[in-house]
Amino acid sequence: MVGVRVRGDDHVQVLESAEVQTVPVSPKLGVNIPLGILLGLTLGVAAAMFVDFLERTTVSTPGDVTTQLGMNLVGFVPNADTDAMTPRDICLMTANHVESVAIESFRKMGVKLLTHHKGKETPVILITSSTPAEGKTTVSCNLASFLAQTGRRVILIDGDIRRPALSEVFETGSARGLYDVLVGQAKMADVVSETEIQDLRLVSAGSQPVTPMMLMDLKAMKDIMDEARSLGDVVIVDAAPILGVSEVSMMCAFCDEVLLVVEAGRHRRSIVARARDHILEVNANLTGVALNNVHYSRGDFYYYARYYRDYAY
Image 1 (cartoon, rainbow, N blue to C red):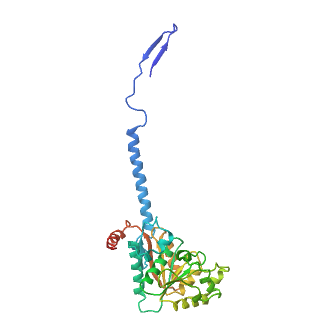
Image 2: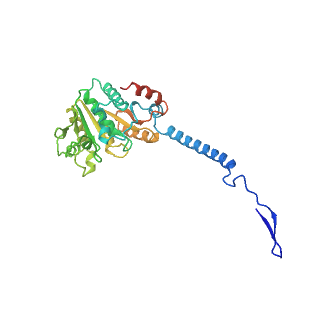
Image 3: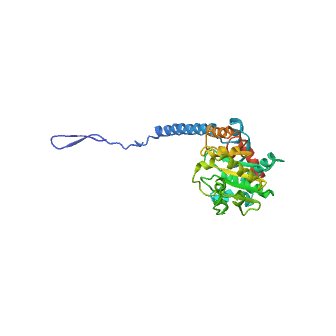
């Protein structure tokens, strides 16, 4: 800075010469860098603690199913790159004969279910989830496809009458289905459609319910399940989420086994426990959990998944 003094005779006198700064006034690196490092570390630790909290309170690994919820693990499906796949492709992975870890997971799950029912009459297996979009339809279709490939006659029923999906997956376009049988407008044998997969036949949801209370007809639902047994060797029901639709609990009571699909890391354990309790409250036989979309890097799953991935051909 320059200091000046003006005399009366208009002469200017320099009091102090200006100096060029060798250090920038801003930013103050000596302060900002340590402060940035400290702030970054704080946010990093907070984020890690938050992720750890989610991992500890959600159902994320096979170990969470067995140790934290006390439920049987029927199988798990690892996360897969499905960006280039259509919903139909995902639901029919096991029918396309392209080997992958996910397909091997469905096969393993199917074998476990078959072993569980060995020597018994035609089993009716209901597949549900806590909430929508956890992968129950994907599990239902791929299990049905695999079981059909073993030579068993499989009947796949779209039990999610309010939000049906199987007619679109199998492109059957059937107008009549489960609801029409339920209200007495059709026979079960009349609404069974052939699919592109040998030994796999489909019963679509049918007409949209005009009177939802008809879905609660206990006798009609029991008769439907009994008739479905006579049409195949295995019956799989792709039901609605159990926490969102009241009639699913009733359907569980008339099935031999219930498989609960849980998407890994999505819900807190309390949500899954509530779905479990809904199933057990009607004295249904809860086979266990199919854990979907499990990440390889999560906890006790990593080392097993690495072997599983390398082994699958």
